[in-house]
Length: 294
Image 1 (spheres, rainbow, N blue to C red):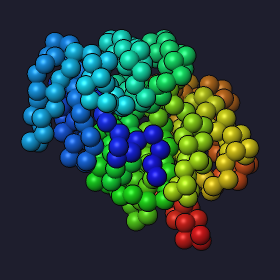
Image 2 (spheres, rainbow, N blue to C red):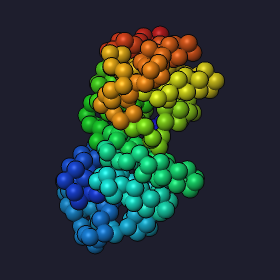
Image 3 (cartoon, one colour):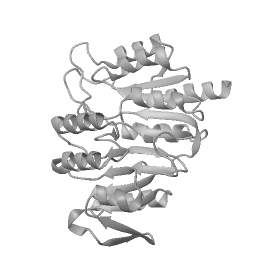
């Protein structure tokens, strides 16, 4: 199985008619995703032909869901308008909203995340993320679909680039689902959410978790693993050489004093039995050993 995104998922794209939206909608369609519509109030009623597929454009998310049965939305919306787009998707009752946009103000994310949690209907992935892919089934976001194939490994990562690298490193085994959760200080879906879903998925045999400096998400994930995860987990923490007090790449990747260091995260994970690689390649080798031993 896959988690959250399957071959039956019907995807709409908010911002589809923009340059990034069009580019990645084309890629999603090429990978087999059921893209059933776009949303742009200024182009409602139009039809866009992408790779010989006619994709209708709707004025609102609610209309798109009503006409197509969509249950997933991917947001390619500029940062200033992301909150409004996300709130619209949540109010329409979309099941999964994948927010690709980088540079969304933290207070905006906090607002629409809280709204999603209160709705009890919508899962937010992102913002500032590559989305998620269930190889061979569906792809919602910007993850290249040709890196890997379906298999027994589940992957959750703060980093888009490291998501792609790990998919490539373990392409000989393949993945049930790969999820880039984003590296902002406030995000919708966490490592723990993904760990819980992979633990419940009968086709996921082992899990790779990629974290990075800043915050305490990995320490909290370690505590969750100790109590709730029975499947083998290997980890990688980016940022061992990052200088204190300097943001590295993601807005949430900043070390303050002894808090949020890669070493502290590594120790917390290893204390609960998670093998942690020093490099992505070493992490992949650790996972390879686990799979081969099973």
